[in-house]
Image (tube, rainbow, N blue to C red; front, side):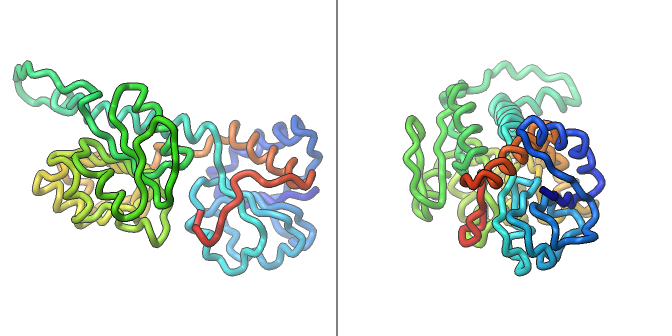
Length: 308
């Protein structure tokens, strides 16, 4: 079996992990990093920020395994005719849960008022209890559901939204356009964990942001285009949104002159909420390669019509 590994230099950390994971899975494979004979390649390991753009020469390739959870940068590539699998790694879920929980608690407890205090002050009013807060979780995939469950365990009231109906035990959930308004109605904290598709772009806009409780917090570790930036800035300026913690943006790195950098009620984090960890992701790749060779269903196969 021949694998071709296409990724930018920062993904070189996979190289010591992947051979060991393949060996443990009983897979004997040659890993290449240059496509001298693309017609001999059986599988492609790919990061969307790598050099590969034309998949047509890889006529024998049985599948393309993305190293990223998001596939919006590859899904429209017309030369990609092979099955495409996105990365779903337990490490991604763990780190996303930690990020969302930390920033939800930060908003809930009003920690910034104490951390950024510039002069003495003694406001003895305690924050509400978590059970008095409403969290709107937009996206009930693996990451969104994991975050919803963790926040529920802390006694937050979580309302979940997905584009199609989902019956999830113990979770108040909605779907569709009407359901979006019900999910956001009265929300203290909004978390966006949706894929980028034509149906989710600008899902947080002037209309939807107005449904939240005045002064609500927005946490976006999902995709930058989920937010109408101008609408969010206007909502922050008016006080409809009290604070926004943003980990993803339409252009990354976020340009130095972007208004988010200077806004006093915006926290910018550098796309770190859930990064792929080579050690754990290599195990996922090895299992998918084993399945492919055994003729078993592939994990995390992308539905190109749905966009994820």
